[in-house]
Length: 337
Ligand SMILES: Nc1ncnc2c1ncn2[C@@H]1O[C@H](COP(=O)(O)OP(=O)(O)O)[C@@H](O)[C@H]1O
Ligand SMILES: [Mg+2]
Image 1: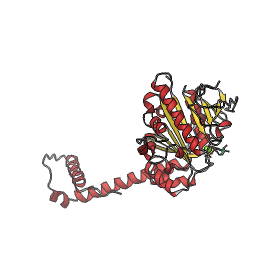
Image 2: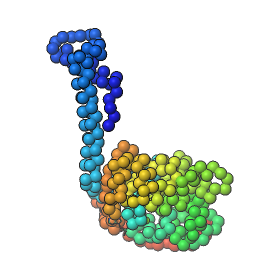
Image 3: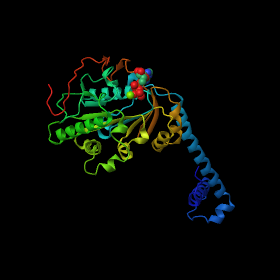
Image 4: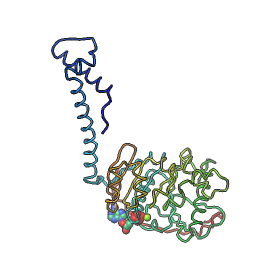
């Protein structure tokens, strides 16, 4: 708790002096001397009042944290806190150890974007997006050759059979192609690219390296830093938040932090969430996330994906089961039907 400064005490003591004067009908327009205030007990009264206010503010802050963490917010009507238009400006970030419900949450967010008319892509190395998914088109990338495309509408890019180096090459090629289509005016709608295992594509220091020639992630970083200007935004999903490029995470306003025990990650996330919340991270259950959006921090409970979710105003129930699997042997430059 910060100790009140001398000037603050003096100002408060003077105010108390005038309050007393007016209470007794004795109006004074002359500022009292410090000595006089001290002798009449105003200084010590002001000091203890200020101290009490501080302690109260501290405990109010703590109480609001305790209240917020006592019970996770179970969003009514299945609506997780998610600001779509803000996501289109600044993306989203989902972190947590393996099996904490990150992909399930990212699918829910993807669904909300799709409902808002956004075309969503997911680069999926683990085939988690092929079932219970809001995206019903899958393109399996079997080989990295040439250039990606074309495809129509929201798509999962299944990169599970590629090695990590080729997954990175694919992501960069895809970003290049998306950027070109937006810059040329060919694509006029909003597009959103979700990176699973983001630490592979957006590693710490990558942005700095992106200024060098022949950087394998040049286009990924280009999309992330300037894509918002022409309708391209990104979602980060990662088990290792501390390994993601720090300046990239700073772009993102909406963060969902799931359970983690990793000291480096907790320390890093503490910078955004504050001490009390970061200490909560290791106690979270599967499906629980600390949601942060600017000033607002709250504990939220996500649902399992198969649960039917009511949308905002309509009564429609979505069962987001995967419907049609379109596997294209995307030999990326060659146009695939
Ligand atoms: N909110 C939730 N409630 C219940 N089960 C969940 C929830 N979120 C995820 N699961 C289940 O937990 C498992 C792991 O979820 P997943 O989203 O794949 O985690 P991650 O991507 O973090 O590894 C899956 O079987 C999924 O169905
Ligand atoms: Mg996952």
